[in-house]
Image (cartoon, rainbow, N blue to C red; front, side, top):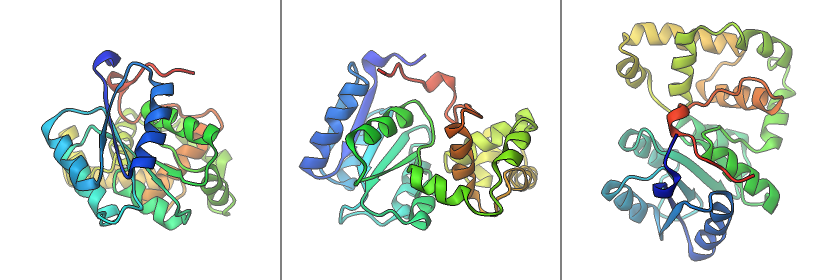
Length: 233
């Protein structure tokens, strides 16, 4: 269990964003140490200098290069929990950030209760996707929850391990190194996961797993139990 007395959470964005999110984070994790960065470059510099448990970014900031910025961040900080907040509600944009390794995507238009729920879930290590994205995706004919429920229970321990790293944004080569497997073997496991969850893209796996968790199914922690926080409820 993580020692929350020394847990550090970084918040990056404009002043209003930082103060608002910092207030919510302190409500959710009262003993956490909250640091602030005024832009993405400043955040990267702070992350390079110190060890942080999580970081939350305003992705509508001018200095960001879209999901690419977070793909490079994920490579540099593979264990960092990453949350983002944006006014953009496009499912395609949300999935592209998840595929880049973002842990949770919060909509700016969400009310305070939903933002608190999102922050709480992200800091617990869960994948958070706005409810309307889960619902719209779940309505598609190829996204059948009954089949997902059955197939989730059939995952092997190795497939669960691959899925955990995949949800963190790891590439096949990175997963292979972490699990001491060949890239070819990882590719086979990823293909099996895509078939299991009845999706065609890696990023859609996050939506499928989030939909299952919304129904109380598949409560695995993609970041491992050693990185869990004591969250206020």
